[in-house]
Length: 427
Image (cartoon, rainbow, N blue to C red; front, side):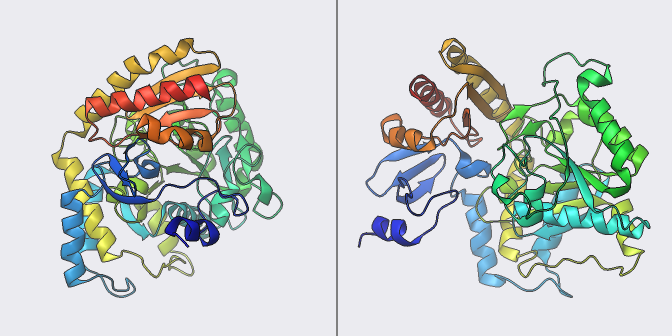
């Protein structure tokens, strides 16, 4: 049995049918923006390996940090113990995240970071004498992960988890913000979506712990970019009704939208923020949930006082070291110039798709480029063209999109854009 035959017979890949598992490439190695297959074919990783590989594969600074840490302390429990990598990372996070977010809870993955945020909100409300506030408000077309509670705030109809309706908690859903980024903001609440938000909170605030959403950019829910003013106003409304505002920045954090965080497009800050994916530059799984003193102390000053969560691999030293190295690269580097250059180039080179039949929209924000079709596109069909195009793209829903590594050279961005145009003309 060849390695690929074994893989197809025994290894379960994300979102696959084990009866008809679909095509798979065997990757031999990766470096920079390029992954190399077992037959020597080289493909540009236009997905940043699901949006996490900011600085490219096998970044020498990050891999060296992991190697050095491996020789000293691969892991130790975080219960009653601490270590320098966790402390150093915490200092770096506080230096770059919104000022009000002063408390850091380390997590295993993005989905777990969302679970932690939701537990924080419920436990905070319990501490405020509101034990009935255990549900959540969110917007349609959102995606927050595959774990149990996170699934409940993903779109129940168009999202990936509709199969579990009736099993997961029933939450409150709003229409997604109707005003797109770049459009004029109307002050009329019935037009900008805020009337619905206020109405739901007016009717149900006594059972809602938090309002959770992806700020400015919805990722897996459709690569939809909405107006930041919606969130500026949502902050005021949430405060009025005692509901915590939670931002899921797992996909948008660390420069992806052209600003350090999607929150940086706003004039307000959330009560809780979830960060992951690019936190370690894509080199090892890790995430964090950060909150402010009000929420942390609201939990700490009420029974039972302790926050009821504690992963085995919390604050894993290898992951902390990788994250510190990745954040140091961001702090010392020129990510703003990189993402700005990528955005300008994609705006020019993806523009011809607007004239293609079947194309509904073309949009770019920071290092995110999207060709939205008026029909569903096939990831398997794109996979079949990858070797010919020299680019690995994985469309979903109606979207052919890219989130390239920030280190991509102009010729690599051109190759990615060319591949997207080809797929838009064929799929």
